Image (cartoon, rainbow, N blue to C red; front, side, top):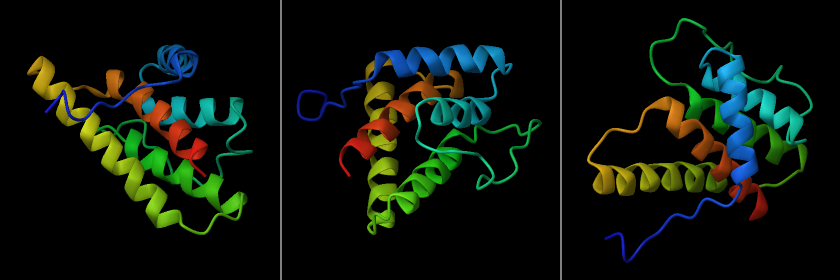
Length: 127
């Protein structure tokens, strides 16, 4: 399957920035995604995001990414929001599946959050 489908990550500097922000935020993936989205000009503020629960035991990166992408698309008046969100979710799922097949290990939030941000940027590039 790896020979047929490959997900390419195209924004290494953005992934490094997410890693740095996660370290500064004590591993909080959602705060890192919001901060990076503001730095990269995707969003102006984070008032649209659901409250980010600092004590949450599950990774909220994907739901935060969906909120960021939705806000960006609304601000740009792009109509196919559901299609873009679905595409982001499919790409994240595909990446996780291929990585699991390759490494036989579950991908943790710390490693997945930079990938999710890269995939957000790729989705925006498609708009």
